[in-house]
Image (cartoon, rainbow, N blue to C red; front, side):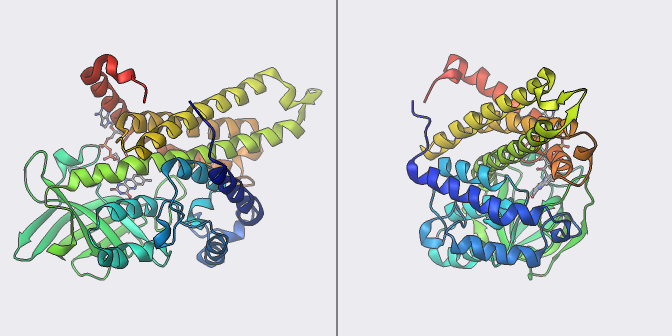
Length: 400
Ligand SMILES: Cc1cc2nc3c(=O)[nH]c(=O)nc-3n(C[C@H](O)[C@H](O)[C@H](O)COP(=O)(O)OP(=O)(O)OC[C@H]3O[C@@H](n4cnc5c(N)ncnc54)[C@H](O)[C@@H]3O)c2cc1C
């Protein structure tokens, strides 16, 4: 087994690291660069994105022919981890959620280059943002979209007409292109279909931008209402009934890119804590010289490295054409916990300063809580693993 990165990917990783150090961390440290939703202000982000593009650090997950870096997924992992050492990083390089997952799935399922030019290219270019519209408020679908989705798309001639309600749709406020999941039949396996629509189409609206405990993704998390949205049949993705398949195609890699980014945030927590305990004195010695403090740091470091191995393994399997369902689930469960642990230890070791807004620890601490919920709650991923274990028996543990 060879755990090293290729020289090209490692050089790129170091370039991202240098860019974050020189251009992003100084902006992140100045609160005047934050908007009302605790994200980077648009006027600050624009020039940063232009600089990233000029330096060849743009859309690592997209093909070169469309302006990206054309990296394999193992390369995404190295890139994203460095990018998300700053909370502003993924947006700056156009590899943030939900756009990165949306770009990846559109690149796979759109049939013609003309469709890609229309629906995908503006997102790659950073001219517009996108949203993935699936989750519904009670009694609609959450953890179980296949079984519980209530939003319906009814076929009328050459178009579909959509009625229903969605919520927690990241980035919807200000997004232009939407991937929408809706029920087209009551078939338990092929009941859902996926559609594309543009923000200017009538028949839908944003009811509210939901207030959450965390700092928000760009465009917030929104509740949407569909009241007769008409979608031409050419904007059905793949075939009618392929909705769950498309969801899996999107969420497998998208869950893993969350892990890649969260590992960067976890490392940043450790970095801030480490710097503090090295300099801070109490009871006659630095905090960093206390064994109990070293144990806290060492434990988190080990958890991060376990998360990196799980994430890289899943990335490697996806690169080799495997769906890597259980590997992605394991990474998602573990890295979500690790991010929460790293943020908690970071706050704890930095004392009152950790609780303040003088560092990004408290931002990460609040954000981290959603990691165990989004893109499949941890319990659901554990259920998936238990099912695989029951089905595969000893084969569950196979290598390769
Ligand atoms: C910040 C944020 C951003 C989001 N962005 C998007 C987005 O862009 N697009 C989108 O469509 N959705 C989005 N979501 C929704 C997210 O994907 C759902 O919250 C998630 O799928 C869980 O669904 P739910 O909230 O309805 O929880 P429910 O299905 O109501 O489940 C509640 C809890 O029950 C437990 N549970 C569920 N199933 C099981 C089980 N089988 N066994 C044991 N316990 C179980 C879990 O602990 C779970 O947290 C976002 C959510 C958040 C918080």
